[in-house]
Amino acid sequence: MATFKDFRNNVKPNWCPGCGDFSVQAAIQKAAANVGLEPDEVALITGIGCSGRLSGYVNSYGVHSIHGRALPLAQGVKMANRDLTVIASGGDGDGYAIGMGHTIHALRRNMNITYIVMDNQIYGLTKGQTSPSSAPGFVTKTTPKGNIEQNVAPLELALSSGATFVAQGFSSDIKALTKMIEDAINHDGFSFVNVFSPCVTYNKVNTYDWFKENLTAIEDIEGYDVTDKQGAIQTVLQYDSLIKGIVYQDTETPSYESQIEALGDTPLAKHDLSLSEAQFKSFTKQFV
Image 1 (cartoon, rainbow, N blue to C red):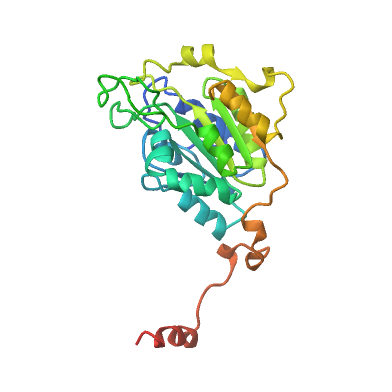
Image 2 (image 1 turned 60 degrees about the vertical axis):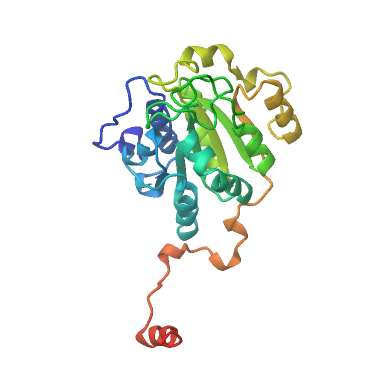
């Protein structure tokens, strides 16, 4: 059985010292080992940005895709080989800006993959500009007088888009984050995990200390029911999205690919897709 070390490779991450992404990477590796996966059973698909480098730091199948397009690629991988555990990841800029359209449709489609967003409320790779999740008034190089836009609300977005697994973690709490990702991987459907992953270089507001002071653990909310979607929405609004834990889970809605009978039990990747010369000629004849 694979261990945490089996998911490590020889590529040293070049994130800034103290970046929250280190913990997210470790949590993914630990979670994959804890649920009994082998490196060749995992495909990690990332986008662009600091967090997009993650696919090169984990010993598994991996694709460092283009900006905002990690989810279409990840869904294609899952459709081609449903035996793989597919994890997509990226930052708040990748998922909530250029990739927002893909995020919404992946949430509603409910394909059996896990999507982890490292949310640091800033564009770190391009040296500190406002991101979609930057709060109003946030001062950056592009907003010297303060951000005048309303920030996105990932948990509200996920719940309203029909996601069947919605969670939010904090990179400093690696034990809880690891368990959260385990639950996300084991969920039969689309698992959305937003992770507050502080940028220690460019975001001096949403720091580790700030999150520790402002986040409320869902397990500390009396009477919380993870299966109650209406209650989840009310809680998210009540706490202004500053909660951590599994926010909502629906185990009744079937995954997207499980409803496609033509896929069968054998993944497409394991089918014989070769064409005979006669078949090839018949297909191309119409174009000649």
